Image 1 (tube, rainbow, N blue to C red):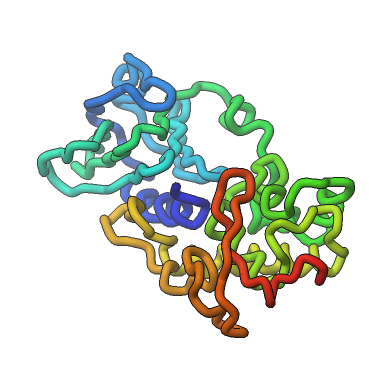
Image 2: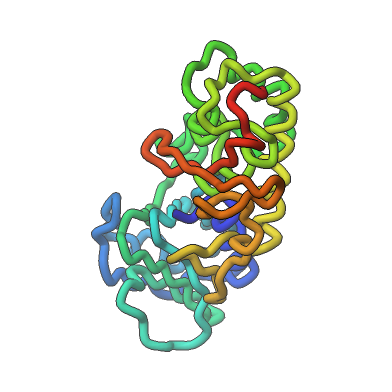
Length: 275
């Protein structure tokens, strides 16, 4: 699933091609996404100018002269900018043509994404209004995290992947951050010391910043706006490395299922009793 770095990479890639342009045409080739695409999407959007492209959590927001497009990439989606009229590919479900003749293509093989038009304040939309702070903003820090772990029995990995606590920290980046903070992913959140919370918040920020610089992580489906993969996968320390030696201590990496997700860790560097 595209996580925050992949969505940020996508947003930054498409905005220069879209901002200031007028939507000339919309073609919906398949409306059956997680939430069906509005039947009248073309009527709602054609002729409107794109004011700004932004991101909130794993959602991309395209502000129009009236209303917004709210986009989520789902499990396997990506957005691409195509110049000219090349033939759409099988899973290109929505095509937006601009007055500069660039085409924004929404590709989603598994169709778990969404592509909606909303005319309300997007931050008050039901999908966004309960979200926690952005992990790269000042509000998310050690003090905030220490406050949130109080009396929480759930594993710390589950807590930092909870979008109402902090947004965009998906499985890959939670796994890597916990390793760098020397915290076992199954540690009950309430067991973390204030110092451990400061360290973890710092590592979450550092991992996400580095991943954004690398264009995200491509394991299977993610490609950036220009069709190129993300390269953070070559920097992964523990994710996907079960039975391989830890890069710090050489102990074999292990895995455990937490909240239905595989969690990779080094039992020597990430001792449950060390926090």
